[in-house]
Amino acid sequence: PLAETSKPGLLGRLMGRALPNAAPRRVLDDEMLEQLEELLIASDMGVETALRVTANMAEGRMGRKLSSEEIRRLMATEIARIMEPVARPMPLTPQRPQVVLVVGVNGSGKTTTIGKLASQFKAAGKSVVIAAGDTFRAAAVEQLQVWGDRAGVPVMVAPQGSDPASLAFDAMAKAEADGADLLLIDTAGRLSNRADLMEELAKIVRVIRKKDPTAPHNTLLVLDATTGQNALTQVDVFKKLSDVSGLVMTKLDGTAKGGVLVALADRFGLPIHAIGVGEQVDDLDAFDPEEFAAALVG
Ligand code: GDP
Image (cartoon, rainbow, N blue to C red; front, side):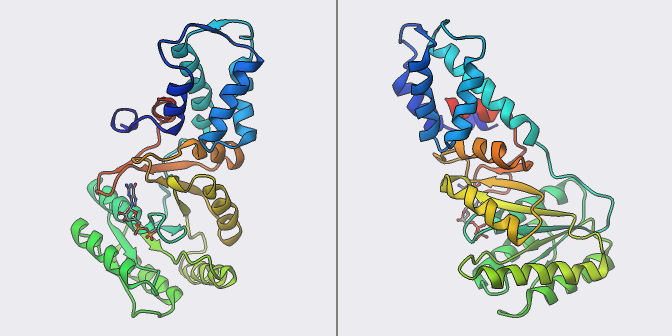
């Protein structure tokens, strides 16, 4: 559980400094709201979202005297309210295999997330096939093989630099032949040449649709929470490159500027299917808005 395992986020530390628990009760006025806004913005929430949170906090409460504890609780409640609609696990669909395309920039945690998902689905009694679709990155392919071996999940690989779409097609054939429940497809995350990447992703989709016109059934965008506001840009970019259906936020175990999740929820409304809270197989949790808000506010 996030609230117990993680230290207070950046926002929590800022709040602790600005409004120590021992501070006397303070009147909720414009000055205080401005101060709270600044704290929210500093936690990577973005101006628009910060204003929404403080406006909601203020509603019907202006002029009231509040303790630091009450202010924190109020802030956590308002943050959780924004997050609630996006807290949804990845939907399981009736198709076999259910094809899950995993996209995101290199280093965001795609490989690790696929490994964790494969293990968790396997443990839940599902059969899984992994396609190591970033055929240019030998390290990513090796990592996936390690995760696959550990989970007892077959990993389809292709010679370095070969066509990812052709690998995806083979993996689809293998998953169909095995009667697998899920096919998890890793993809390249080189944003240096977006046109190439877009074509590569589009080709993977075209090819798997030859076997199942409804595929992919989910397109997960993996985002590194420690990149702060960059995550917003990455969603913008990947929404153009692919049909993003949900998010996985990784590295929420560190001193992540988790405020960006609130901005993401507020701006895009994409479901957050899971959060990464470490490098181990069990470190992938469902997203719990109340725990998250409590941990963020500290
Ligand atoms: P990829 O390039 O997108 O495939 O990213 P990787 O899966 O290789 O992850 C990059 C680095 O981040 C690796 O060192 C992972 O162990 C680490 N990592 C991934 N997810 C998490 C997480 O949730 N928490 C932490 N602390 N590290 C993570």
